[in-house]
Length: 250
Image 1 (cartoon, one colour):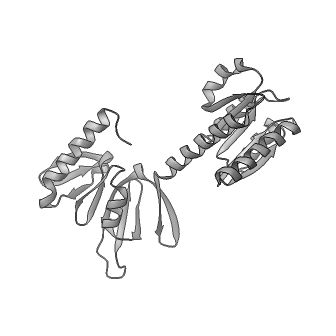
Image 2: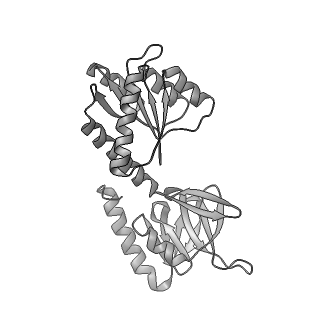
Image 3: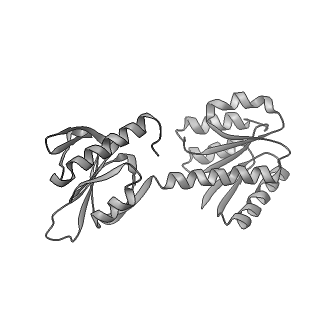
């Protein structure tokens, strides 16, 4: 489900955009939660009062009061950097002015429904790709969202009370959870993770150097490499670095 804000001071335009979103929702089976705002000030106030953020902001550039670009600048100034912004305008000359607010798309009115749909589908695909870079684990009594890049290692930990205990190690904290290490190794193998020992998976992005039988990681952590895996780990890491240098990593 994607939260979408439509911000336009013309009722007809808001209705048009909303109807295109609903049509796309039915056609492509994408769930949108839509909110309407009739001014830039109203949308900025939503953020200033800690209202739930949106995935997508569809902003009319020419509005009474603060215009769409000024609205976007204020929202970015509140440290909301993840929202994807689509500007709608009658005048293409505003395009250059909008670059500094990290714009996803600039559509000229009248908006062709086919182009609008293409851009929105692309945007939803982008969000889906982002989702794959996160995992949700159960830790204690809560669910924790961890970004792949923040995880230094996943370690199977011995415990008398918890079966299949795993430690998810990040810079700031170690999160305790449960699971099968081999299943994580398989699920994460295309995302820079490698099992180096029967009880350790490492994130190759955090490798600092290899020393005799161990790997040194970010934050000064050290993990053993299984004796039988030593050559495989070093070869895999070499390939990973070559791909990274040439920009082939995911």
